[in-house]
Every structure is written in structure tokens, then in C-alpha cells.
Length: 96
Image 1 (cartoon, rainbow, N blue to C red):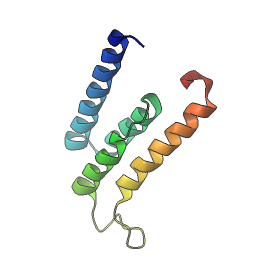
Image 2 (image 1 turned 180 degrees about the vertical axis):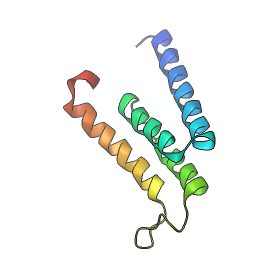
Image 3 (image 1 turned 90 degrees about the vertical axis):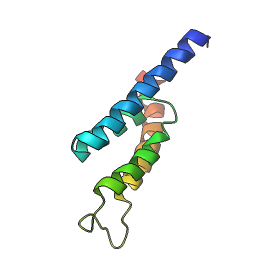
């Protein structure tokens, strides 16, 4: 892999992170969740999903989102998206 391709992927990832951060702060929570899902599908090892899940839990986590005492709902979804994205990349030829 040459340096030009590596730099392009780096800048695409940074742009995606900024878009997710903007949507987490200024748009409804489901828009950020959708972008996190897309990031997990299109980027390799999108571990930022975990940290964006923590941010969404800090912003939107309330008593209403409480599954039997487990309050880190968005963080768990972020981890699920990471592992689901890895599984889908192995199954779908487009990402190979």
C-alpha cells in the first residue's frame, strides 16, 4: 500500500469521525447511531464506535433507557456494530 492511499484513508476516517461527532452533538441520537453503523461497515477496525457509544450514553443515557440495570446501551450497540461489521465484511464479497 503506497503512502498516498494510506493518507487518503486516514483523512476519510477523520472526516467520518468529525461527521459522527457533529451528529452526536447537534442531531438526533439515531442519526449518530446510523453513521456509527456505516463507519463500522466501511472502515477496518472502527474502534471509534465504542467511544462514540460512550459519548452517546453520556448525552442521551437516561433512566428511560435501562435494561435490567444496564445503562450503557449505546456503548453496547457500538461494540455490537464493531463485531457485526467484521462478520459482514467476511461474508460479503464487496468488502473483501
